[in-house]
Image (cartoon, rainbow, N blue to C red; front, side, top):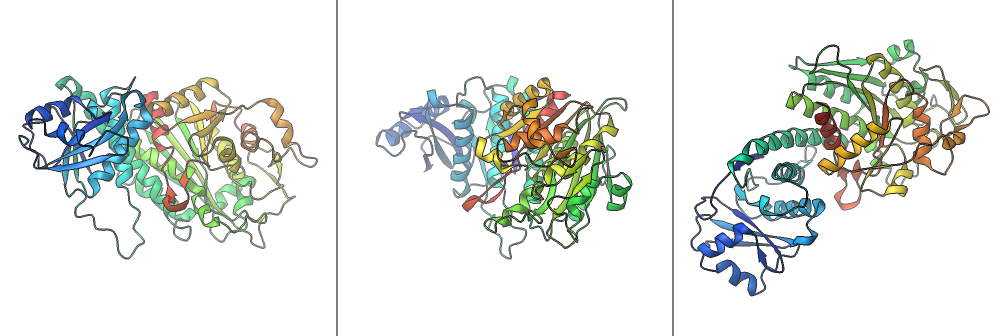
Length: 495
């Protein structure tokens, strides 16, 4: 979809569809008042007779409004002005997208910057409009024999800005929004693919394809033999039961100076998680194809960074494997030695994400990172604690965590910090090894992060648990692409 900006008078504008905001109770926006005056009160007449009162979720499509050059006028309800916050604005854009989908217009001109959002400027509104519209238009139909008809879909949206001074910031917002949206779509595609297609080898091929023709991006793929030489016994313990070979994928983007320390992203890439010998219940097990969404978010983020040509050094590390219950699979009670030399008693083979991440986090040391952020669909306990609205963040460096939270608030991909106190480490005690891979039922998200913290002492580190936010279940089942927007915004802020 194409996005553009313009400063224009709504009455003289020739467009297939003119979009105007209406708030409660029956209150026209500034643009709406101008259009109403030009149409000799037509809008107010329609509103006063009860066809549109401005409630959130309402929309009304009008044709051939007198005195107006546009073919159609779409009224979008915004709710009460006092209730218009960031969440309400994004919801309004979603409603606008749904209304445009079947209105027959291939292009539209929206006066959405008229909508007042406290503390948010035109640039933010433009960027969020690009992100939400792109999200709403996303379809995963690659594997359907009959895809939906897109001939009448909206192809271009022009957003009006108040003055020419807003154009430069708005264009930058569009550029970033398009790049981030494309990265999100890549992550969603990878997450939505079935595990018989999206194997570790497939992810490696997609990473390699991303680097093709990109001078600043280099990809290397380590095979299981390479991992054995590096003594990655923890990662290999997870892949032992799978016929699909594990891969350790590294994407290195050099947009900054050679001597600049890179930001390192580590994404969990379990392409299907049966739980291994600690087998999961059968209900909703199909959703365990989403257990590689951390890996997908790393690829999506790097794609966005490459598209924007950001002046920063960035490394993505993706440990990827299946977790299967084969005769050679790791068993509860087995003890393995990680790349760091620390030994791990595996009490539950379904706590496998931390086992592949810990070796990848040790591997990250070689890049002498500015900071390391791991992203993983790690614990069901995170959903119990926080639901499916924010992702959890924990780590060993308060300033890094603060920057991540602020980046999430900035782009509406929110985080909530959980404590990482030393007292929780006691739950990982083992009678037979340096640590156990689980800490019991209590504080499961925290003890999982405690486990990872034992491999991150040499750098600034943060852990994002995206188990509740990486995908949706039910009728809307599918990957969300989170937290690509958060990660990309964080990286933008570092430049």
